[in-house]
Length: 426
Image (cartoon, rainbow, N blue to C red; front, side):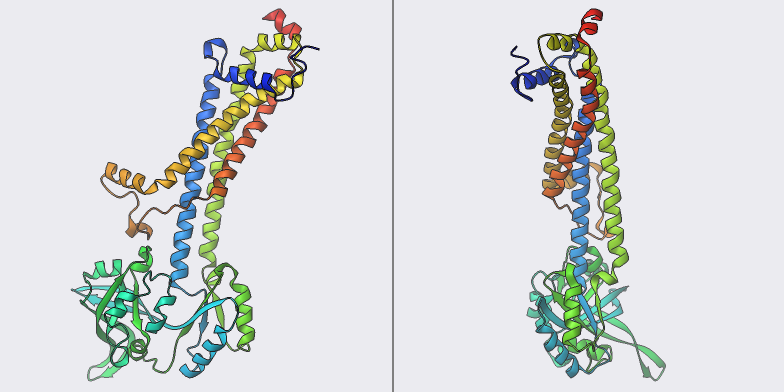
């Protein structure tokens, strides 16, 4: 039995032949231009899919962080009960497993005025001691507390506002802002809105322009007076260990409180928003996956042309003992190698792009003399990206499998070549 015929499947002989065909110059019957184009297409498709999905994951993570930081995991309406009764409910809920914190709050839409500028905002009133339970406040409101947040008669007159809201009003720490409410008071000229001037104790930044552009934090006692809610809370902010599994915590809270409260979780309130994020992610992945599939289909043409160029070589190998299966494996490795190399290079470039997304964004902004990602338009102050290694590996695996799959047909055609006819006509 010849040495060729005794070669192991995917052994040294077959690997050497596949490598030789890949590296041969075009004039010597090497990989065609179409094969090179397919390699480039797979490279760009893999890199584009990794970059696109990482940026979309970053968008989703940043938006959800801002969403969960700005509103409760579970919201309980308590505006219909006295403050003492609400405090008792808080104590009961704090004993429920998986509950991290419970904080009362008041949420009201207001008109803010300073330096001749008027804009809308949302007042979030909480007890000063509960500031640390707000994830969007990175320092737990330490700056505002140091400036006297919650101190003085009825909670004092110190508030904390978002970065973009402060910029819009043209105010800084220590400046005054007038807060105009929707509540009315009777006076000599009839009904007029209740308003009061407050001092900006601190300016916070959450990373979400949407929150930083509207949120105002106010001491609970002061808000109860301003919004005519003395002796009452409006809602309870319940934070749980796993925000994605609020249903279990809601059931336990309902049972612990004797079914006396109405609960709403963040997923229910934002069902449409979350559904849009999921649909967008699926459609983008599908679109880029189809592009990758089209790129891998070019491997068929590339390997077929390589087979035509190597018909004589195939005939000679068959006559010295290389089996049909051996020929099939050689050209299967050629097609798979083209896709694998393209996928590997695409993975490397995609990962490096995401790791250096900040400098790349700055470079693009410098090149276009502007912002490619305006914070005011997109609601975020930077281009977010989260590198998901599972996504990277699954993208590379998909490209590898597709390359192997499309290489089967031309490899089978190569293995079916009749060596007698090939030598006669070659």
